[in-house]
Amino acid sequence: MRDAEARLDEAIGLTAAIGLDVISAIIVPLARPAPGTLIGSGKVEEIAAEVRALGPEVIVVNAQLSPVQQRNLEKEWNAKVLDRTALILEIFGERAQTREGRLQVELAHLTYQRSRLVRSWTHLERQRGGFGFLGGPGETQIETDRRLIGERLAKIRKEIEEVKRTRGLHRSARKKVPYPIVALVGYTNAGKSTLFNKLTHSEVMAKDLLFATLDPTMRGLRLPNGRRVILSDTVGFISDLPHELVAAFRATLEEVLEADVILHIRDAAHDETEAQKRDVEDVLIELGVEASEERPIVEVLNKTDLLDPEEREGLLSHNGRKSAVAISAVGGEGISDLLTRIEGALGKSEVHFRLTLDPSDGAGLAWAHAHGRVTDRKDRSNKLVLSVSADPQEADRFRHRYGKGLAVEQEGGTAAR
Image (cartoon, rainbow, N blue to C red; front, side):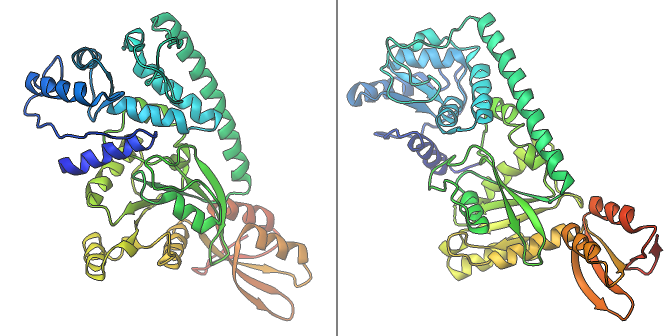
């Protein structure tokens, strides 16, 4: 169970993410949900009085409302009401930049809207972008006719399938020069994009806002041992993530499903860091992603510069010194330890062998460097012996290229030709 104050702070952060100013925020104890309004009639009347006094444009209920509950509350308060799902979708509607991102958001939005009476939401003036939750008079609202929405959903799904095929082709192209994928996941605002920029020297949007990153971004990264990997920044997770978004963003999160290593970035300085950790793990499980030998998940405790030494030591002890890496993405502390951990996680899947070349075979030597990591070299009078580490796919290419003409020795001592 999360602390009520922390949940309220998160809801305020969500409203700030789309530029809304919060003029009042209250916690409503709820022993039993009311079927018609979620909260009790007394609280409904109390909030109605405050609404008349303050005159807000929008009232945000940090919970999932049924269509009936939403309509009843709008009628009682005579104001626009957004529930948690609508608020998150509104943020996504404003932030998504790529074609794929906008298609995914519209799919989630229409799925959510299909059971809602959009025409009853025309009493407010439109103030900003997004997908129509904050719509106003004179504005064309999304047609509520189920047939038209169904046709649009079918068209969007078809377009998303085309995008997925394109992404599949890109992945196939990468596999021809198979760089491992390292995916960053974590709770929204945990510092994933700041770390991404630090590691890749990029300028991806990184702000102290919930859902600052929506569209996946990928960059090349060279590890200290010389191995090249692809680093993928992803959308942040959040508690009670709308099921519409989990389904809609599955394609966007395909890079996580395809990743060789997953870095779970945590905000170590946040009061709710343990609860956030569980929320991320729950979403990963829902996506079918669990830690394994083939795809390890490395826990990264970010923002440790905001902790005093005792808190930092206690957090590391609690999470296990061998499993967690403490860093500060802003200051750079612990980055070298993180890169070492990535190397170790990727090293579990590598094949190690020795390759013997003719000293005059410059092309073969260049090919070995291009398709593997040469970790040792011994120059002898009539041969050149290389110790090489490579991904399994590349190891097969070495065997195919050199198997008949040159000796390839496994480090355990056996030989393959």
